[in-house]
Amino acid sequence: MLSTSEASRPWTAAQRWTLVATVLGSSMAFLDGSVVNVALNALQRDFRAELTSVQWVVNAYTLLLAALILTGGALGDLYGRKKMFGLGVLVFAAASLACGLAPNLPLLIAARSVQGLGGALLIPGSLALINTVFPGQSRGRAIGLWSSTTSLVTIFGPALGGLLVDAASWRVVFLINLPLAALVLFSLRPVPGDVPGRAHAGQRPDVLGSALVVLGLGALTYGLISGADRGLSGRPLLIAVAGVAVLAAFVLWEARSQAPMLPLTLFRSAAFSGTNLLTFLLYGALGAALFFLPLNLIAVQGYRAALAGAAFLPLSLMLAGLSGFFGALADRHGPRRLLTAGPALAGLGFIWLGNLGVGSSFWTAVLPGMLLLGLGMAVTVAPLTSAVMGSVDVAYSGAASGVNNAVSRAAGLIALAALTLLMLSHFRGVLEVQLQAAGLPEGARQAMLAQSSRLAQVPLPSGLGSDQAKLAADAVKSAFAEGFRWVCWVCGALALLSALTGGLSLRAGPPQT
Picture 1 (cartoon, rainbow, N blue to C red):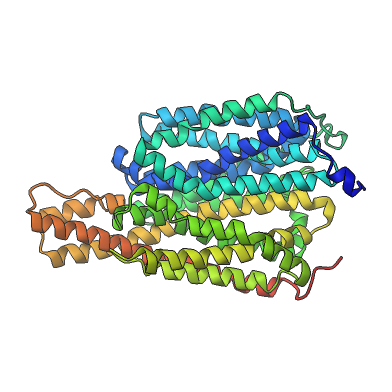
Picture 2: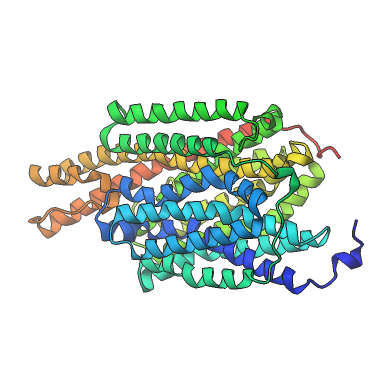
């Protein structure tokens, strides 16, 4: 074990460059996971697209990242962390260029898929490189600095994205990755290369497992989103069911595989299963609610993109500022009470945001909800990580962390697809009632209802008088607010279920040592 003096010894040049490269690389990937939501309204307007089409700009990235992040970590173990991290940066940068120049939505979605592949290589590679280059106690300092710096980037990501959209274009949100990637690759040059461990010699990535989880999650998501447009029956239902069947085949394969990407033996621990169920419920709610919130703030409340992005600051600042305190509290008293109280507070935050009507005040409707949500997530995140890591033998801590990371991303993907069904259903129903009450001509009503899958971007028919146009625009905003209310209430229920899961699946008292 290193002494205190050894732990505080100045870092070598190679270690400093490693930290610079991993912080910049991770920040690039984390930024694209948070800033794109703020640009969705501009994307939908520019491409004149339905919400379910624009949604794939988020889903394509999340799908590949969730499905392949475990494989990305395994590839680093097999072929070298520096090599895989650098490859991930190159792939991410090339895909970012394609995103920024995409002339249409299908090409943008394809490029986002490739971005997800790049992220799956570089995100696990960043911490693996730190683990390789920093020995013993100096590793804790490095990880702490990596965590605080990337958290800071994540905090200001949505606000930065909003500024870029307002000042230039949504394309700049992607193109800004190019100079960042160049800096990462420059910083990576002095980083020492690592030799793959002998424990991994002769192993191969779980290619079939990776393919099955991509196909299964992709089919399930596609079926649910298609059902939002056409109704969840017929072909969409068959595709969704096929996705579930492929995911079942994935589980069967992982149970038989000699080197599974998802070690099912981990789930023999009740605490590990419970914490991952909590993760699935809570992060599913978070992913769905925070997808629709910027659309509401921009299209219904009339915020500029920069202000809509800034609305996320209370959540991010509380998460960054209080996570350490609650993590230490969990170390002393155990995570059970915190993992009951935290998700419950987040659930109250979702429910509060559900009261965001047309023209609601930021100070009474948005800010309290984001503060509750931020406090709830701050209470939850660090104790949840500790509980996941502490629920399995230390030899499996890396695998446990990777599984939990993948679960959180898959949860957001599936919940968003499912709640889009709910959003569109309520939006159409309320819009039809509101348009009838407004006394619009039959042709105008039918034209708007035919475009209802564009949600708040439903175009107003030509030929309406000024009063009729205002009534029609107000009907669209009211319908979106009503759909958003139901989404938030369901997200609140999911968060409260996750609180119940935390209370039932974990033991009371401090962790065993």
